[in-house]
Image (cartoon, rainbow, N blue to C red):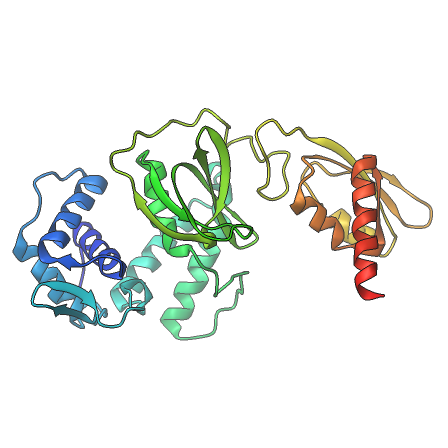
Length: 335
């Protein structure tokens, strides 16, 4: 059965609430959350009735949409999912869903040739393959890189809307180096994916930082905090001289020249380390010398380490010395 946009917003909001195990949810709480969501996404400020949310809960519990949500009431007052791992986002696609997605894919395919939508080809191919395999119950014929065990993806939605709506986030976060999680206010500006991990760039105490979503422990909108507009970096150009996501404001690109042996030179030539890569010299023995202009960070270093004994950094000297030191440290571990 077709479901209108407002109903989907309410279902998604109820689902988000019930997945939050750190709070007890009354019917009035769910009504308020749905009203806030409809105002935020659709500008509807008249609120919704108690009966509407009750009917939404019944619809989510039923098989009509394929949710069969295990919503239960406890203490005669509070709502929760009986299965704490349940979410409507994990349910299989219905026939109506597949039909709608098929129509969407057909529309998107018409725009693939336009330059403005040049980045959509990969997205449309993903959607097309997923919808086709779901409809025909076949194995997908395109296997895109993915990380099924990646944590933090549940936070994508709230961060995305916080960026769009210019809202401050209260972030409970623990870096790999920290002994415990730390809670702080964060002004989000940009979501970025790199190597199948998601990061959010934003401001904390006047400084630009990036946070990995898989290190977030809890996140919520800080309604009373004033959002600080981004004046720290330009998302359109910030990554032009960068491999990866590690870059502080003020870091400058450097010219890196490196030699690659003949066996690996064709691979480096056809899959550059960076878009600025240029062939400087093709030597008689088949080896090649390349140059790139980039910010030197840990992601770039790891790319070079992937070629270990087949590459030599010619300049700058500091990067060459660092690589040599790392090689010596690795050798000590093996011998």
